Amino acid sequence: MGAQEKSQGNSNSMQRVKVYRLNEDGKWDDQGTGHVTVDYLERSEELALFVFDEEDNETLLLHRISPDDIYRKQEDTIISWRDSEYSTELALSFQENTGCSYIWDHICNVQRNMHFSSLNNEIFHTMNSELRELPAVELSTLPIILKTVTESGIADQMRLTELILNDQDFFQKLMELFRICEDLENIDGLHMIFKIIKGIILLNSPQVFEKIFGDELIMDIIGSLEYDADVPQVQHYRLFLKEHVVFKEAIPIKNPLALSKIHQTYRVGYLKDVVLARVLDEATAASLNSIIHSNNAIVISILKDDSTFIQELFARLRSPTTSAESKKNLVYFLHEFCSLSKSLQVVQQLRLFRDLINEGIFDIITDVLQSPDKKLVLTGHSHTVLESGCKPSAVLCCSPGRNSTFWTFG
Image (cartoon, rainbow, N blue to C red; front, side, top):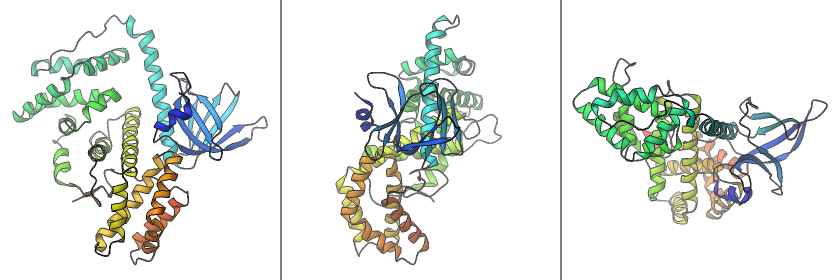
């Protein structure tokens, strides 16, 4: 399957850029404007940067991502590198800093996986102290598990990740032990479980994240991170999430996967920005951001394909029986929905905006612009910018510390 075909399934990868090439006179030549994505090379497991011309979809740039330290991020909107194939400097200038950050995180993740793969091939199998198995998850073995997690070298960390993933009940047993320690007020045990969970998160494994951020485990995982020995008082993250974060739907979202992703996105963001803010390394923070971006794209993709949902949204906006407060929330929802649709590929964006126009979005914007509520008028203006093809900064659908159409704080 070719890159262009594959990119159809990569719903949150396309970002608008200008491509520049450094000429012999030391000046940057504009090579054209298009959309960049990270995708697999045809008939290969190697990943590359593709830039497709926004007018005719021709390939403006194809660059195989290198494991070497050649990439530089500048001024939040530029990524440049020395390209050996072109024997010159190349640069991508992004329309938005969020797009630049997204592609930069992608490049860093690809390089990290390359390095791990290289280590796996060259070092892992020659290690004399290779991990063979994990001890049983029991109170008496917590010190051994902690030592294994926190003192492993890079090659052993890879083996540790493999062993954790192979043990289907590892996290269930560990969280069951956490609940027992909490019931017994076993502070030493709780401190060890905190360090174990923190160490496992810093392994930065997407497969591990998939397990621990699932609906079944994530609240216990967050609970275990309340017991940091370096913090004088026990934290109350779960209490905050249960009692002070209210899930408010401007319009009912019935798809269970969309709802699950909305809840997960908020919790992962809370974990990144609050719970582990002072201990996360840059690579792990980037991986958590990637989960958030991916979830946003999944939610938008589900909602845009639900014709009943779109129709109900506009029916409520037009209905004379909808209260002013409800209508305001619906407008904010529509604004956020359009903002997040930037994660879709350009063709999907155009189809969505066509559907929104057919439903009468410009009539809604006209009404909003006549509102005495200045904040609402500003939102309506942002809608016109979005619909005209310009794209203001994205608003994460479930970001701690800010109000959202999906979440508010009580």
